[in-house]
Length: 160
Image 1 (cartoon, one colour):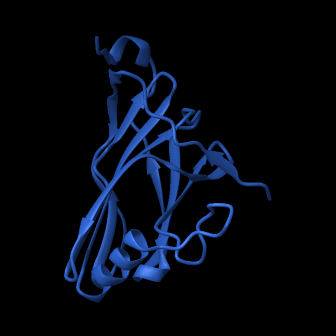
Image 2: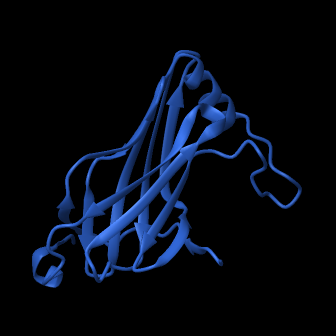
Image 3: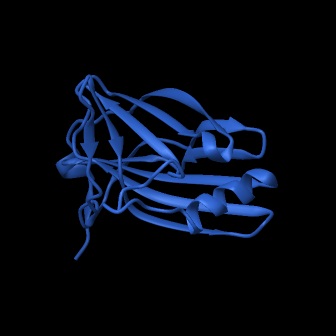
């Protein structure tokens, strides 16, 4: 199976429509990840993602985020960070963050990312799989049933 790559593209300059509220995507001892909500735009979905870790998981996450080595081609090695797989209408792929900020110390780690998925699900379902085994977050899959995606052109708020 070939995986689609959901590119790290910034969402459009408009305020999207909330089609799903906050949801916990995965939790393991000392680490949790979720979405603040799901925003729909006529051209796709914006996913504001948050991850928090404490204790030994915070130390592991910080080590993998702030000092991860890259190979000669600039590709992440086995120290890679959190992964988010997205499935829309049978197309599965790895999402790349369009925007990401992280901070941490030996005891606390915080990561906030924005993902852009350049298609709307025809069946209203969004399947997400999150994992970061190197930091202690076990792989977890969640299927979301999104609210009405119809008429988004008239429901989004354009920004100047």
